[in-house]
Image 1 (cartoon, rainbow, N blue to C red):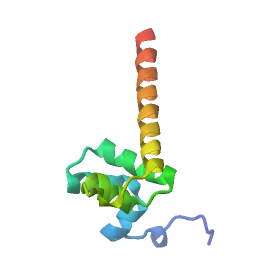
Image 2: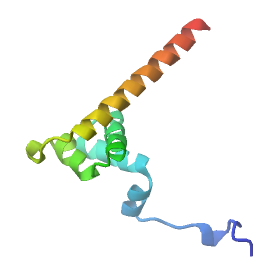
Image 3: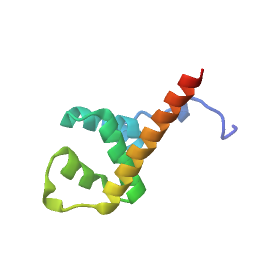
Length: 101
């Protein structure tokens, strides 16, 4: 059998926790619902954690749960601001492109 062949053995059923760990979009959605925060904010937080090598639990504790006792992470804040700047620039580019047509 060719190892690239797709068949029933290729399918793996994940439990909810495994699925959340494997699919970032699901984790972001679940955190957004659990903490009643905008999905875009949570998505940016997860990406900022990745970029700054900050453990996601820090973001959850400080920014979703509101527990400021753990101090600040300058790297995380810089990564978050960078993401916001990128999103703003992307939005402005789309607006400019749309206005030209």
